[in-house]
Image (cartoon, rainbow, N blue to C red):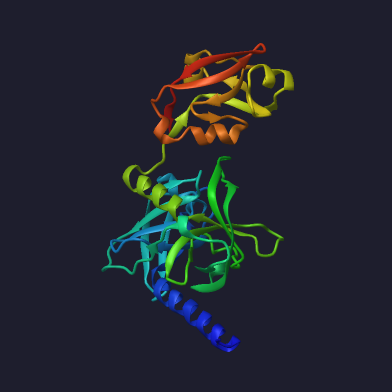
Length: 320
């Protein structure tokens, strides 16, 4: 049986090998406001995913620059000292992912996106980034949990988030969380202030999907109904009478004029308990059902109106 020192040496070699493989592709992302622009600059991390200069980072790192009005400059600084101008290809605040592009350079080192669906709790996780401006800092730990949900800046839930105890600090945002094989399994995005070892990364499979759509379209479209809703409890009598398993639904608080909800005849006070194939127990479930794939698709909604269960057909439209 190997002794403790042998095991520690093997662990150290695995971490070192992964860092040496990935760190050349990790960049410091700096955002500087032009004179007279509203809002200051900022800094974070990112990593190159293609030799022609595509970079993944967090949406909140390039907030302001993503408006595309020229009020902010973005720069990607590499560990070898190069500093390249970067343009925002697209960003998605709902998942806190942004794609940048740098140009005017030879083939760049690349970090490989891994498959986050095969990640297991307890496996080694390595975070690489630029906390507080310290270039290419490395921390390691384990994957603490999988399948977490994290609320983004738009209020939508980001699903399939990886929890890790690899220490993150301001400036790590946008950097990669990698395995000992040097595969990126997440984009470091958030910490719980005041807590120890509660750090979160957007899973690489989410990143791959969002990034591909940002590269194609610059933005992410999601289904739009045009309603404001609030979670409400269902009475036992209502749930029993209509054979509804859930204990809650969403009450319509507002209906926008000329919206899909208005066209479907939804009214203030209606309680939506199902949309399409998904039971609707709260606003988050409603948001999850309104994916890009549902745009233009006729969805049946089960609605409680005046204690009666009715069905209406709603066709979501697209909205960025």
